[in-house]
Structures are given as C-alpha cells and as structure tokens.
Image (cartoon, rainbow, N blue to C red; front, side, top):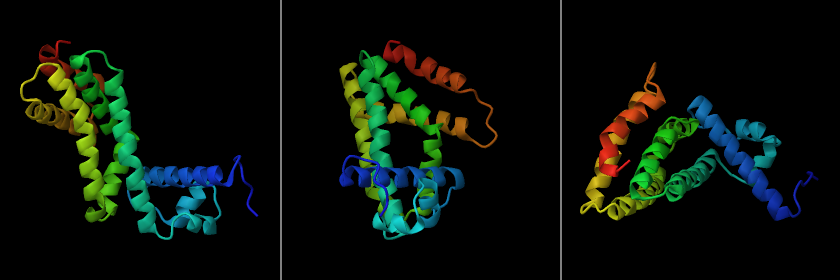
Length: 193
C-alpha cells in the first residue's frame, strides 16, 4: 500500500495530481516535446504504474496540462492588474505581466504545447485564455476614459508582441529593462505614467 502524505485520501490524490502536472510542465519546458507517462511519473517521484491511476494516456495528460496552465497564467496576469492602482497603472501592469510571462519558462511550456498538442484540443482553452486576459485590459482602458477600449486593447497587445519576440529570439541580447522602457516611452504618456 502506498504511503499517504496528506490528512485525507482526496488531498493525497490532489497532491499527486499536482505533482504529475508540474512534472509534465517541467518536462515540456525542458525538452519541448510531449513527455511520456513514464518520464512524468519518474519526475513526479511516482512509480511508473501509479501515473495510470491519474491519466490513461499521454493525450489525456497533455489535455490536463492545457486545462491547468491557461487558467493559472490568466490568474497571474489578472492578479497583477488588480494589484495596480489607477487605470493607467493597471494597463501598465498588464503589459509588464505579459512580458514577464513571455520571458519566463512558462513560455517554453506554451511553445511546446503548441507543437505537441492537437490544435483541436488547444483551440477552446486558448480562446478562453485570451478572452479572460483581455477583460481586465479592456476594463482598465475604459476606466482610463478610452472611448474605444476594445480597439485600444488590440493596439496594446500588438505593441507587446514584437517586444516579447525580440526578448525571446534565439541569441537575443536585449535587456528586459530596455525592452520595457521602449513600451513605457510609447505608452507612458497615454497611460499617464
């Protein structure tokens, strides 16, 4: 009988599932390919056969990773926006949080998922992720007094992407502070920073 390191069996199962998902994310980030169930179990510190109590296949594991990561990323960005004071600071928090996400190991997970997961599985979570990310941005822009907040949100997002790509390009020597400074110079006056 396996040892249970939690007050209840349900909590133990939740901890094990979390360990498996974290292991799969780490393997995705490191290798940019779908992790096997055996490698994921090993990384999570489980017996190879134990992982099958949680996931029946590699596809099921990847679908669970997708269902786990996008809401977590959206929550991180939403939290950063909510912590900011004033509408201009909220938009700036959105910009910074997105750049931080693009330059974190989590972007490696996103890239790997886009390469190894069936686009049909990704479409709905990605659309929901982007819609959830947009809500606090659009709300902050409306609070700022922007008469066309949806269009302004498109412009803000369009400004973030090339900077994020420049930061993450192979061989990039662009300093993240310099990259943020470019965006601050472009958006700062409008945002009242």
